[in-house]
Each structure stands twice: as structure tokens, then as C-alpha cells.
Amino acid sequence: MIKTRFAPSPTGYLHVGGARTALFAWLYARRHGGQFVLRIEDTDRERSTPESVQAILDGMAWLGLDYDEGPYYQSERMDRYNEVLDQLIAEGHAYRCYCSRERLDALRAEQMASKQKPRYDGCCRDLTATPERGAPHVIRFRNPTEGDVVFKDDIRGPIVFNNKELDDLIIARTDGTPTYNLTVVVDDWDMGITHIVRGDDHVNNTPRQINILKALGADIPQYAHVPMILGDDGKRLSKRHGAVSVMQYRDDGYLPEALLNYLVRLGWSHGDQEVFSRDEMVELFDLSGVSKSAAAFNTSKLQWLNQHYIKEHAAADTAKRLAFHFNQMGIDTSAGPALAEVVEAQCERAKTLVEMAENSRFFYQEFESYDEKAANKNLKVDVQQPLQALRDAFAALSDWSAQLIHDALIVTAEQHELKLGKLAQPLRVAISGGGVSPPIDVTVELLGRDTTLSRLDRALAFIAERAE
Image 1 (tube, rainbow, N blue to C red):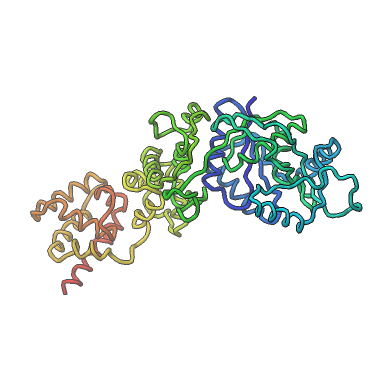
Image 2 (image 1 turned 180 degrees about the vertical axis):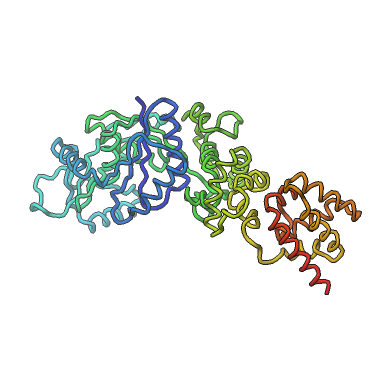
């Protein structure tokens, strides 16, 4: 059975690069009827925080990347790592190294001065006389000195490393804590991981880990190293390019379906198809379709996808997410129109839910002032009389519906020999405070009779005051 994993370090938020790696591993497992494991690599005690762990769990939950096992925590597996360290030493695959920091720094400086690749020289590899018991030391893996490590990467193809290029890496620090290259090997072995999908910054770790797996007599997983994500400027994606945290995209008004769809296309393709449902991703995803080159993040493309999903999604579902953003803005939506109706009215003109919430603020909250440009253009003395007539027509309506509102608007415009827009736009500014809203009859219906009449009274008073 195929088994993949996502193994982030909780030293910060879940960033989009990690989320894409998690998505690829999740999709591969789901497509092949396998299992997906979440493992938290929290052995860095100084930098790992509970807040970062929660950010990872929140990000995975928001994206809907469910896991069959986990979350496992490396910090809870120290006894197991120590057991494997003892095994490697006992079987001659690892040894204690007593070299001081000063010696190693001097060795490195000497090698760099002579233009050699900095590497450990094996000083303690075959010690016959060891220092007194308890002397400070690290534990190093005894890497083979002959032959090659060859593995077929599912994205990059065959990769070869000569063992002479790999020095004896440290697998336990002076304080006894195991290092990444040991813990990841033990975890993947114990958890039965068959396919490892991870960033290509780990390519150089792979031959070292394969050699440790071989020393333990473990099966070698299949590897797939995903290229990094670049910003629009061709440099590695970072905070300077905008949001890089998954939950920041939520806070900025993106739908998880849109971000997932964008991430799956960031370095993977299936013909010219751009929009993928979750089921289509599972059905079509294959590592052979992942590009070997770095992918560039394009915020405009993400916004296009987000708007697509806002328009295509059920309004009731989007309304639940829109409520989150109104809450963030401190706006109570219980006294205004149903949020699902607002979504239906606004979905064609909002790229994000934050934008939708901002544009819909006037439905639930009195605006402080009119947009100056819109007011100067539309709330003028010559529209005072027709606007008053429209207010009276609205007050007399037997039923508050978009159709009757529309009819009243047409009749009033005709009575005052105005084109429809010459009355509709002043009405829009009067009730929304600005020059942009959904279709005016829908906007008035959603706003309600009392609020509409109140705001028309306010606009008429504003016009009268300016006239004086």
C-alpha cells in the first residue's frame, strides 16, 4: 500500500510552499488508495512553538487536507531515536566523535583556503583510545567510502551521488539530541512511508538518508523532490511578495478551494485545464506531470481563480465564510439582509471576500460620509425634486420587491424626463454612500424600506444644505 507523509517543522506558520508539498503528497496517496500521514518535526526545542503547531493544524484543516495517521510528534519519540543510535553504534555504523569546535573550525578554514570542499576528515572514525567516559562528543554516521548512491527521483529522474562526496554526518548532537537526518529516517522507516514528496532543498539529504536506511536494513522509499516556488520577480517566495502563510490567505479573503486549485497548478499541469475540483485533482494528479523547474507565484492568477469560485460556489456556503470577515471588521450582520443574498448580489464584482465585505458594509452599517467625488457629481440641486418624488413612490409601494422598485424608478425618471441612469446613480450614492453597488433595484430591496427611506431623507437634506 502506498503511504505518503507531510512532515513540517513547527518553527512558523504553514507557508504556501509547504502547503503545496502537502497537497502533492495528499493527492498521490488519495489517487492510489493509499494513506497520508501528518508528522510534526519538533525536535528543534528552541524554535518549535505550540502556536506554530496550531498554525500548521489550522492550515491543514482549512485546506481540507485530512490525514489518516497523526499528527505524530518527534519530541515524543526520543526513546526510539536513542534505541536506533545505540543499534548503529553497536553494529559499527556510527561512532562517537570527540573533535572540539575549535578543531573543526580550523579544519574548515584550512580546506576552504586550499579550495577544497569543507568536510569532516574522519579523525575519530577509527579511534582505538577514547577519552574518559562522559567527555563531550557527538555521534557520527559511518558513511560508506566507496561506490555510489543511485536513486530514481519521480520528478527529476535518476540522481547519482558518489559516497566520497558525503562525509560522516552528525546524527546526535553533544547534548544527545538526534539530528534531522536520523529522526526522519527512523520515522519514515517505522511509519512505513513508501513515497516521500518534499521540497528539492532536501535533495542533498537523500543519499545520506538512503545510506542510513541501508545500514538499518530498511526498505528504501521512492523519492520525489518538488522545485521551489518563486515570486513574480523570480526570487524565492518570501514575505516581500505578500501573503505566504496559508491562514493569511484566509484572512485576505481567499477561498480554500481557490488556493488549492492554484497550488496544484503551481508546477503541475494536465493539458490546458486551469480549474480543477478536488475530485478531479485526485483523479488526474500524477508526479510525472510535475515540472522540474521552479514555479512563479502569480497573485493575479490566484485572484482570478478566487473570483471564479466565489461566483460558482453555493451562496449559502460562501456566506458562512463572508460572516468571518464581517466579524473581523466588527460589523453585526444580524440586523440586515441575509448574507447569502448579499453574496448573490455581489459575487460578480469581488475578487476576494474581504473586498466583498468592504463593498457590502453599507448594508449593515451607516456610512459616515459620502464619497466626495460621487456626491459632487450626483447629489446636486437639479436631482432634488426627482429624488424626493422617488422617495415618495418607494414609501407608497405595496410590496418591497426588486421588480416594483425597478418599476417605480422607471416611472419617476420618465415623469421628470430623465434617463434611467440620471436618477439611478444619485439613488445609489444616496443609499450606499458611493458610486458602486450591485444592480440598484436589488440593492434597494436588500437594504429594506426603512433604511432606504431614511438614507434618501439624509441625501435630500444633504442636497438642501449644499444649495443654501
